[in-house]
Image 1 (cartoon, rainbow, N blue to C red):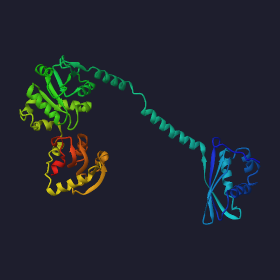
Image 2: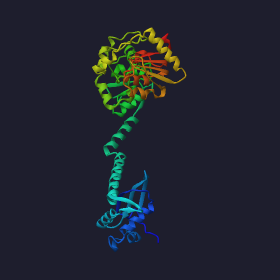
Image 3: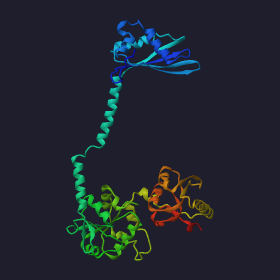
Image 4: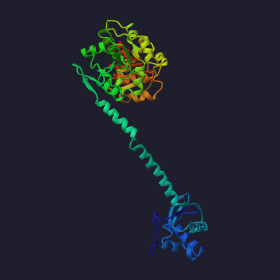
Amino acid sequence: MKMGKISPVTAKYIVHTQIQIDGIVDKPDVIGAIFGQTEGLLGADLELRELQRSGRIGRIEVNLDIKSGKSSGAIIIPSSLDKAETAIIAAALETIQRIGPCDSRVRVEKVEDVRISKRNYVIDRAKELLKNLTETVLPDSQEITDEVAQSVRMMEIMEYGRDRLPAGPAIDESEEIILVEGRADVLNLLKQGIKNVIALNGTNVPETIKELCKQKVVTVFVDGDRGGDLIVRELANVTEIDYVTKAPDGKEVEELTKKEIHKALRSKVAVEQIKLDLKPDLNKEQPLHREYKEIQQPREIQQVRKIEKIDLQKKEKTMFKDMLERLVGTRGAYILDKNSKILGKVPVSELPNTVKDLKSVHTIVMDGTVDRDLAKIAESADVKYMIAANSRIRQGDTRISVLTNNDLI
C-alpha cells in the first residue's frame, strides 16, 4: 500500500531526533522499528501508519553513518498535527530500545515550528529588500533641485572675447573675476555656483585676459603643481593680477569639492607677496614665496615637505642599478625597506595597490616609467626613493627622489 506524503509546504512542525545503535543496521530496519514499536502505544487516533496514510505525518527520513561497527544518525519526521499531538509522537519515539538485533537509544533534539522558521526568513528577507529599496530610492525634492541647478549652471558656460575663452556668464557684470587654467576648471566652478570665472586656455596669456586684468580685480586660481607656479609667474610678469591661490598640493581645480574651492578662495594671497621671490628669468623654476605656500598647507604638512634629498652612495647606486637591470623586460618592481632589504616583487600594474597596503616601503625599483599618479600614491605612503627606467615628472614636482638609469652612472 502506498504511504501518504506530507508536503513541506503544509507541515507545521518537524521532529528532529538523534539515534545511536550498537551495531550495523539499514534504514528500513530503523523505519520498521519506528512503526512496529510504537504500534498500539498511543491508541487508534495516533497510530503512525494511519497518520501517514491520511497525510498528517509526512515521509520519515533516516540518515545513518556507520563507524567502528556502530550506527548513528538522525530521524526527521514532518507533522501537520497540532502542537500537543506532535509532542506526543516525538516522545513516543524515545521508547524505541532495539532496532533489529541491536540495542538503540533515541533522543528527540527538538520540535521545530516551521512557521517560526518561515517567519524568520520573511523578516530577514524583508530587511534585505528594505535595504535595497532605501539604497535605490528616488532622491528627495531638494536633491533633485540641486542636481538640476548644477546642470543648469554648467550649461551657462560661454565663449568670451575675441579669443573665445571658456567663461561663466558673469564676467562683464562682476568687478572681481577668477582666472583658472582650462575649460574643465570653469565647469567645476560653475557647478558650485561661481559664475565670474574665465579660463586662460593655454600657457600664453591671451589679449582678452590682459584687457580684463586692467579692468577687474583678478584672482588667479591654479592647480597644486609646478605647472600652476609657472602660470602664476607668467601672468605676474606680463599683466596685472591682484591675488593668487592654489588647489591643495597635487590636486587640480577641476576635481575640487565645493568646500575645497571655497577654502582655497578664502586663502588667496596678494600678488605683491609673491612678487618678492619672482624673477624675470622664467626658465629658472624657483618655488613661490614662502608665505604663499604656508597659507595653502597646514603647518604639519609643511614639515613633511621639507624632506631633504640625500645623495646615494656609490654602493647604493650599484645595488639599485643591478636590480634595475634584473627587472628589464619583466614589467615588475622590487619593494625595499629602509635597510634596502627586498620585501617582495610585484607586477608594475599592481604597484599602486601594494604601496597603499604596505606601511614600511622605503624604496621602489621598477621596470617602467614613473608618472604623476604613481608618484602621488608613493608620496602619500611616505616612500623616499623611486628607481625606474624612465620618469615623466620633474624632481621639483614631488618630494620623492626619482632616479633613472642616468642618475645611477
